[in-house]
Image (tube, rainbow, N blue to C red; front, top):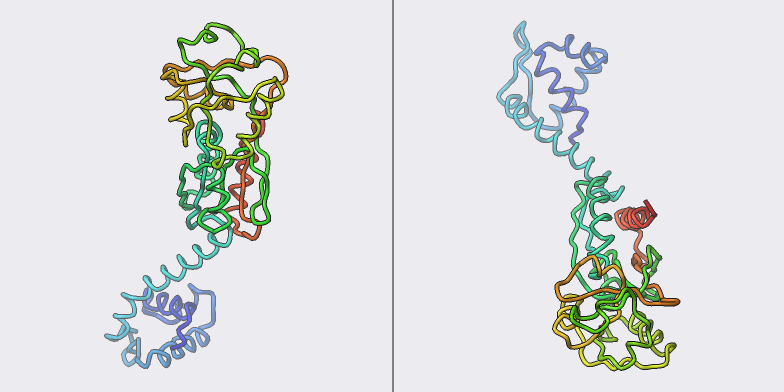
Length: 297
């Protein structure tokens, strides 16, 4: 069945007017052209739609059925066209987003609000994952875009810098250093450390160890936590001190004091990452929104 939407619109105009001449004027076409479209529609459907035997034009039973169905057909067709256009523009669909806790405590909410404001019909599925897990999930196609920390680009995944903030010392609230205004890195030489497991973020782990080595000591790691809440909880419990990006000071965890470090301090980058082969407009929109949100106010 070769049913044209233009024919359905013509049919609805005639059905509304019940007069071929008035319907033709309404559609700005000639009456012969309009009659030809109706006859073509009737041939396609195999049924007469209008009773032309009397002086007044009336709908046949088949015509009344089509009058009920045609608006729904046109609505769904127009809706499909809109959705296809939106999908091509990255405005609809599902975008799987990964984020390290650092970003969730800082830039991620701003990015999500920006995307939601521009593309309200784009569904966002957000999960907290460490950098290493995100890089694997991006390469495997289980994530579309990620917010990662101190990550190196790979053959499969592109990485772009967003923001960077310095390391801070995180110490228990009752620690001997907690009452000061800053921490000399050498004062941490004999302290037990709470850190991230290296497999969850090799680049970040190596930044911390490298910083300690530059100041004459290797951190004595006594505990590790797979997430920032666990690590700061261990610090609050007095198990050790930690070095963390300054983003986490925004969490204001009870029992933990964040202090700046003296001298030159390494900065930890937050980045946006995506699959190199992904040409999705939605991913491009997210990357652009992330870069805009990273700009200084």
